[in-house]
Amino acid sequence: MPDPRTTVVVITHNRRDELLRTLDRLAELPEKPPVIVTDNGSTDGTADAVARRHPQVRLLRPCRNLGAVGRNLAVREARTPYIAFCDDDSWWAPGSLSGAADLLDRHPALASVTARIVVEPDGTEDPIVAELRNSPVPGPSWMPGPALGSFLAAATVLRTGAFRTAGGFHPRLWLGGEEELLATDLAADGWWLTYADHLTVHHQPSAARDATLRRTHGIRNTLWYTWLRRPAGSALRRTLNLARTVPRDTASLRGFAEAAAALPWILRERRVVPPEVESRLRLLEPAQRASRARRYTG
Image 1: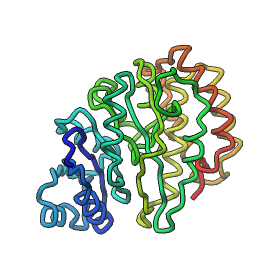
Image 2: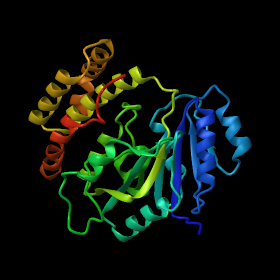
Image 3: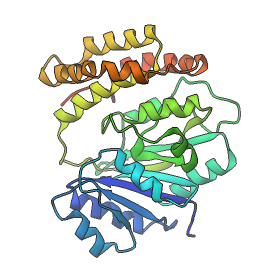
């Protein structure tokens, strides 16, 4: 049956064919969700192709690549209580949007539900799934699944009001680990995040990506988030661990240099999380250090 509770939000940039495949899959869902696509300044005819093949999709054209902020634009247009993020190379499995909305309906203190990620075409689980399933973060007894410290934008349904109140994705971070800052701000606002093993997102990674640039941004954004929200000791510990473990090359050096160049902004914007949130984040540190899914490679 159609389910009017959730709007699917997709951002894209020069991935016309992958986006069209994703929109085809979303159009087949039994929930028949409204879909909003932000085309981040594509030059490959993406917007025109979407308008022709999926005229029911709400298409936003900001004319430049806004990164994750393109999601913020789409959420402003959403008129549903929940929003489901989806990348242009991923799609939700039938019934998963309704399943996530059911959890959010039943648990008013829950801000987000992250689904299991299956990598296509092989149908294998993404390595990050084991970390989500075995999250060490303690949660209240009512939690329907493991409590999380962050979420994955390509596989998460969020409460629209909570997202807007927290400010959405920060424009300085652009793309690359941009979820961590928003997730921590949601937690500081009193919200909980969970993982649901019975919900599924399929991901067929696009070949059209600059892995080196993404690594630079990932390192920079991890440092920015850490310096913006973590207490001094935790921030120093994570910074030193990152410096020891990233590849020793130009891309890593650029990530650290871009992060350091923004220190005046960091000092102005720094807002340390409450102690109860910091205690959860500290529990995640061993898993982050040992993670196979968080290697800064490429």
